[in-house]
Image (cartoon, rainbow, N blue to C red; front, side, top):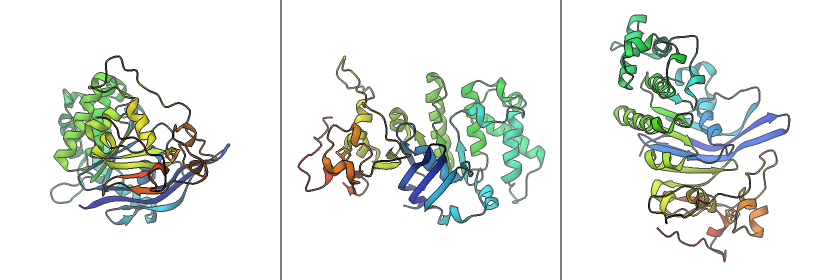
Length: 340
Ligand code: SF4
């Protein structure tokens, strides 16, 4: 398996009026070639910060990359100059943002915005830069490919003339314009009506298999994860608390937080009238994060050791990792097996 992105011990902080927010506190992740990795968790757990660090598009006045490496195809992205990063963004790593309305320039036609990406990065069959005419034609072709009705007419319209679903299709067309190796989708369906969410996910999957692109999808929605991901990383309090193949997380989850997330969604085979459970409490303050397990205050199994000592990562299988003291061989408490 070829690893296309490898994140090693990433630590990212934001400097705010309230102090230093330790948003990401030592994340390790791998994305394999032609694979789909979902990063899941509540708002503020560090999932978007982790993924956006790959693109290096944070506000650099307030963001500090404390330590770590992000390797893309073996190249350490933190060692590249801003100019070199510009060649990677949009060209080799594409991005789909949560809100398509704010992702596009309201004063430019949608066709021109896609063409602009092609003019900057696109090449013809002879590896020459595209002409404006060719870029515009390719933009229309891309709009057609993402199933935009009347793409010639739509290419000349402005973002406000599109519906949310149509706009997200245009953003996907723009992200795929230069056939990137990696696509990062940050909550790509959250801002959309439920009726179009499934269509957008299907389109992302279609584009992914057609172009063999590796995908990182950031979401709080386990329904989205089940629909699209092969591997999952569950984040909480700036850390990955559990990761594994989709089956490890949905059927063999071993972290109380992952269990809580799973219990909070409805299941097809759930008992009739069974109420959905919520996870009581709130996530930790990352200005002053706990020394131990970040889930301690909300965990029904919390022990004395949890509060003061960070649980180590335990390997449950070749693919499945979990950070919980209950997995320590000496621990008398064990999480009961989930009934399927
Ligand atoms: Fe709960 Fe302790 Fe496990 Fe954290 S380490 S999830 S507090 S049992």
